Length: 127
Image (cartoon, rainbow, N blue to C red):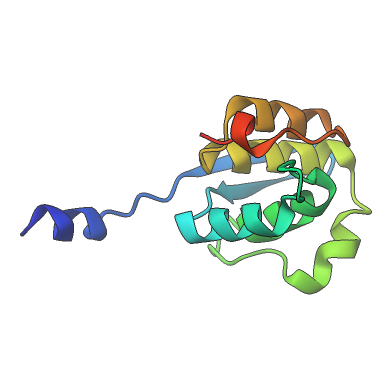
């Protein structure tokens, strides 16, 4: 098997079980693929190169939250508005883990964990 084939054969998706005390349950948070991360970044970066965390948060929660028992995605794009009505602490917990697992830099993860409306620049926050 070639090196290329071995690389493509590896399941390299990062996963982590995350306890959400506000919901009294545990979810599986998965890191994004390269394509998903690039699309999210492209859609959520303004012309000045800053990430809009208000726009990113529901997309990250939708794309990265899975049922640990079934492996199925918990939310769909239709849930974006409803997601933002849930506990900020719960959403920050999921978002911070998802960003870390997806390879976002520590500044972006820190900002997401604060639930801040400030937006770190792309150049300084992506690995």
